[in-house]
Image (cartoon, rainbow, N blue to C red; front, top):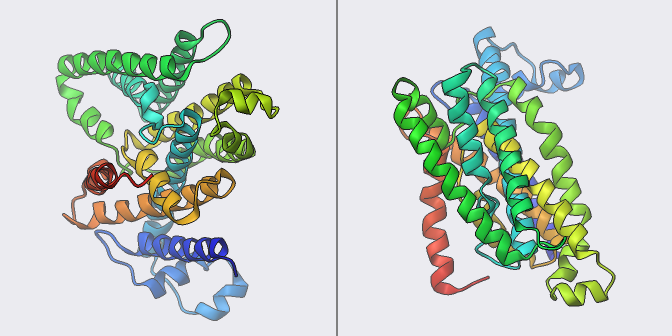
Length: 335
């Protein structure tokens, strides 16, 4: 077994472990044996191995609350990590992340506007998604120069647009005093409002975006040599940049719309994964997606248990892990 196969095998086992722990741990702890019985209850073949009955209350917690939450954690973590890996490869810059081009700020603005104008269960994630995608296309349009997208201009445009939407969001939070707490918790990121509906809303965009980015992994590898060299080797650089920006934007907007703003996943996870699997995007993209899902599901477990029975926003947990690790990377220059 090669080293890469070993890494993927380990990640597969880690994902299963975190998945089961996510179903088991919370304000009401459910024994792992009961979790296994509960999730195999609908499969007669497996039921013969687990046996026994499961209390109706446990089934309600497992299938109505925790299963969609854990699946959404894994999906969002995978999406953010994949988009971050794509951005770092596209910009050839280890400091790049999905939020650099202002998507999170735009999505926050959409959420704040929805709370003021049309509050409701679905209006906030829908407005956040539309606003996030719209912000990405706005930055994309501003960055274009004679049909091309200079990387430096794209980064500066994203920073400028992001600051603008952050300022507008702060103003909306100021005038929406009665809904400020809801928006404040949403901006910090969390999965307490997870549901099957939100999961099904995010699946098409993230489920299409990750394979779409992986399809261009060879082009990303070639583009690391520089745009001129990539053109010489037959890569349609502008087309690849445009498609990858659209796919990354759709992924991040979908993630933000269902979980709020969760930082550092798209910035740190590709770095960490690259240390173990190398810079080849054909391996790095799927590995980063797995690590991102594992990491965010693990952070959600901590968010539910650190101050149980209450819970912390997941964004606080990811920042507590991400900021020190990023400082370590800066001091060691290991990228």
